[in-house]
Image 1 (tube, rainbow, N blue to C red):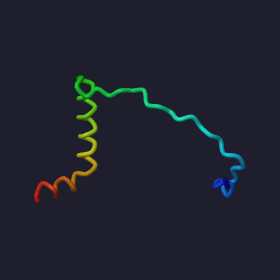
Image 2: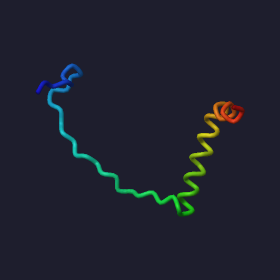
Image 3: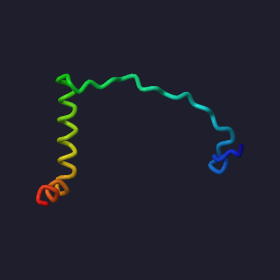
Image 4: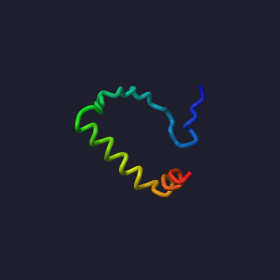
Length: 57
């Protein structure tokens, strides 16, 4: 197999172990509901004009 990273100066690529997710999100708890509310507020603030256009359709 050809080393595809050799053009970037990597002589021998290293196989890294896969990292499995360990945290479970429970959105039924008050902390989970706060997380959803905070993320929604950030998205609404970032895309205010887009949501305004969609609301007027």
